[in-house]
Length: 137
Image (cartoon, rainbow, N blue to C red):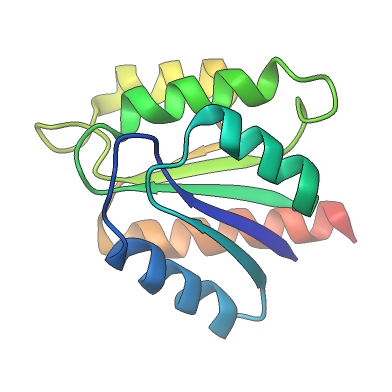
């Protein structure tokens, strides 16, 4: 499965992206890593250029909720990308987890999976990707 891995617009951290990229590659995925500070416009263009099966957004600066909301809304506004599966995870709020209300708003905007930054969230990401792989196949 081809995964487009990206940081969010305001997040300049890279260690999370390196870790996730290696984690996903070790599980047999083809990973296209965009890096940190990816704007919604750049993400949209990269989705068109690379034609991924899934987008995975990662944030550790605490602004992942706001940034992911803008990114997924931009993707969903594009007819050719509106159905592209999107997972977001990491530190989504400055006070830790964004809570169920924030997760619900991300899902309503079009995020298919909303994860936190706990150990179990990587297992949840793997389950989400496995389910997507069955749909793609």
